[in-house]
Length: 318
Image 1 (cartoon, rainbow, N blue to C red):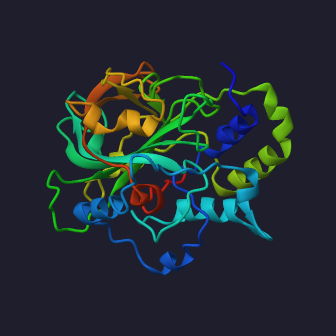
Image 2 (cartoon, one colour):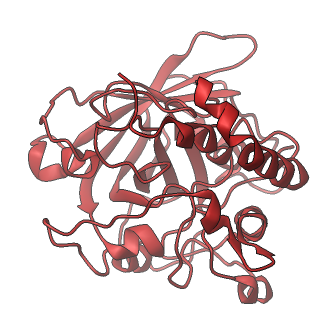
């Protein structure tokens, strides 16, 4: 199936690599506020702010023109902020990429033997906040879509834990170039996704050049999401972390609702047993992904706070 506007796919190819939560507002004031962690219940309350009416879900289309404001390169500013700001929420902002989505709360559980450390180790349990999104603002199956699934792991099992806790964040996508899949559940999401390129990219060379330039200056390997924050989470000072190279989330919720808008498809009211994703990892010694555990999502938020306040810091490449 051909998308309505295949030219936009090339944007997805380069943009998704870093920008799961990049927005256009300047958050530079946060640099002076040292990140001490956050409280799960407070962040989840902020995520729930401004619930959307079922008939008025948010709309926002990513485009080249929105990357600039006069002489200011908003894309560059947003990329640098995402890499340098560790805060779990921000003052309300407009995401330039992955602008529409639905958020969830649930649990992270590692149930199999694992050679890795931190919250990849066997027996690890935590609470988690996640956001499912689409890279270019395409909610329905009429366009090709690039689906993302980002997570924020809190090192506690108590949603009412009063402590400020540092989180570990991860990012996964199915295909950077987008696919014609009819359901969010069809394809696994990975930290090093495929990149489908289409002939229409020839008409987007100016945009591609700008994006590649910005990303190359920001991080040395934007094509893969780093996993070391999860392997380091909960370790004592001096303990050595060991993280996998590959990370994959595969749906274990096979119910198809037939809904065109992926946000409505994912609403928990349509899934009696919640949403479940298997956690798979791989490394150089074990290149075939193997299942280590699962994520179970039991609360959702289709809201302004989900789209405009929740922030997933992106770890720099090591």
